[in-house]
Each structure stands twice: as structure tokens, then as C-alpha cells.
Length: 405
Image (cartoon, rainbow, N blue to C red):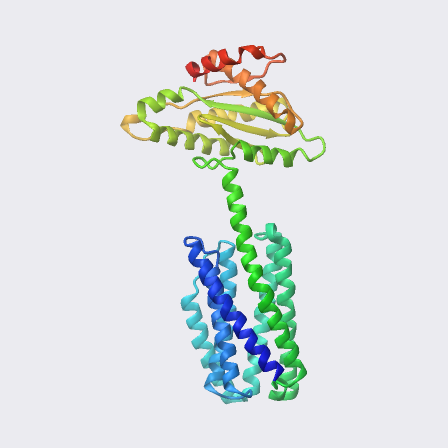
């Protein structure tokens, strides 16, 4: 009686969260993060348990065959939902139909050849193997595709391991004691359905939490990146530098990169061409810097690259790579743009060792950049040991910069 009540509660949990997952997937629209597949998994498993309540004692019945097929289809739906959550597109509809129909045929053949005990044992063994596969994928994901969700993924692996162990025990009991092992009044079925109710209570809210975390991370990423070029913005650069300078003896150099005559490009060709040039510069910057270096768009036509741990020679090499890459690669196709040549001037700061020194490095690199503009542009200029201009000259420099850009 208690086990039957637990199965009823389990049905309510599963079907209720089906509705919640569907509502969330509709809100997510484009990127559903697997919520639609999780809804299908909950729905099929909920219907399977409803059929179990209706079919009565374990044994042969078409209702039981459909129940077992739906159980396997629900496992497939959960696997597809997990894959989609981590950005791997997987089909669900036709594989579910194939598994459902195929497993129904297998059940009929197994029951005809070896009886209902073999059919129930087949389901327990198949579920156990599926759960072992799920746990293996999750443990692999902790070191690869799910490193940012390590704690949550380990929790899922632990919970799924529990249901795997229970299915192995069910298989052993079926093989040794027959269908009597599945009596709803037996202690094992009580433990089994208590655990299943616990999973139905814990896992769906955990999945919702993962979706909310992913959305929050996406919003944080959007706030830290320039919408046009997808490079870091000033805020994102500051956060990344803060993490870098937590390391002992961490040093860096700032490369300030400014597109030459960008105002002329906008005026002659239009802002849409100017935007295309900025995106081309951003792509060239990404390809020119080293693996651990940071690239940022400060605003307008001004970019920055942070060379992590670079000495004088390394910083100079990166600066020349940046200048040469943009000169060689940033171009527009078509006769209208035949005369368009994009170059940049690069100002390199002195070495700095903490986030508080970034502003001074900006001033040093900006002064070097200004000298490079006056010297003819399309060049790399190194920061002088002494400031290029006293503090009072900043407004004059800003006005001159408009003319030199």
C-alpha cells in the first residue's frame, strides 16, 4: 500500500515538472538548453508509472510491455537533454520511436522464449547499463566539457550511481526469487520507490538551477564583452587582469592599438564599412596575440592587448605581429574599396604588476601611441622612461588626437 502511494507521488512529481520544463523551454525559445527533452523524459517516465499502477501485479500484459518501452525512451530523452544542455545537438523523436518499437518487439520475443521473469530482468539489466554509461560520461565531463559545473555534475553522477545499484540489486533478486521480488509490499520495492521519489524531488530543481546558472553566466559574459567584436570590454579586461594578478610575481605589458585614419574610413565609405573594419581588426588581433594574452576593445577604433608575462622582446614581437597582421589581412573586397588600406599604430607600455598600475600603463601606452601617430602611423612605438606630456597638456593632446586619428 505504501509503495503504491509512493508510485502515485512519483507520477505527480514527474508530470508536474513536465509542465515546468515545457514552460521554461518556451521562454528560452532559441536555445532551449535541453529543457524540451527533459520534459519529454519526465512525461514518458510519468506515463510509464501510471501504467504500472493500472496493470496490477508484475507479469505479462501489453500495458507492461508499453511501460517498459516508455521507461527506456525516458532514459534516452534524459541523455538527449543533457547533451543539448552542453551544446551538442542530438535528435530525439525518431530515435525514441525506434527504441520504443524495437524494445517492444524484443520484449515479446524474450517473454515468449524465457518468460516474464526474463523480460523484467532484461529491463533491470538494460537500465543498469544505461546508468553506468551516464555516470561514465558525467565523470568524463568533469574534466572536459563540464568543468565549470564540477560540483553539480558530481552530484548527478552520485545520484545516478544510486539508482544504478538498485537496478543491479533488482536484477539479482529477479534471477534468484522471480517476480515475487517485485511485490509492492516487499521491503526492496519500498526502498526503490523512496529513492525514486527522492530523485524526482532533487533532480528537476537541480536542472532548473543549472539553466539559471547558465543564463546568469551568459549575461555576465555579455556584460564583459563588446557587442560588435565580441572582444573583452574595459570591464571584462579589468576582471581578467584581477584574476591574472592573483598569481605570484605576475607581470604584463599593455599594447594600445589604434586604427589609422578611421574617421576618414567612416566618412568615405559609411559606418557599416567602419564596423566591418573594426571586426576585421578584432579577428586579426585574436590571431596575432599569444594563447594567454588578452584582447580588448576599449571603445571607438581603439583596442588593447595585454601580453601576459612578456619581456621587452616578446612584447615587441607581439606588437609587430599585430601591426603586420592587420595591415595584411584587414581588407574589403570589391572595386569600391580598392583604395582602402587599413593600418594601425601600436603603443607599448612599460611592464606593470598589478591592476592598480593599469591606468599608468594606459597613460604610457597612449603617450607612445601619440608619438607613433605624429611619426607617420603604421608603426610600433615604445613608452619612454619619462612621461611624454605633463598632466596639464591632456586636453591639448586629446584635441590633437582627433586630427591624427
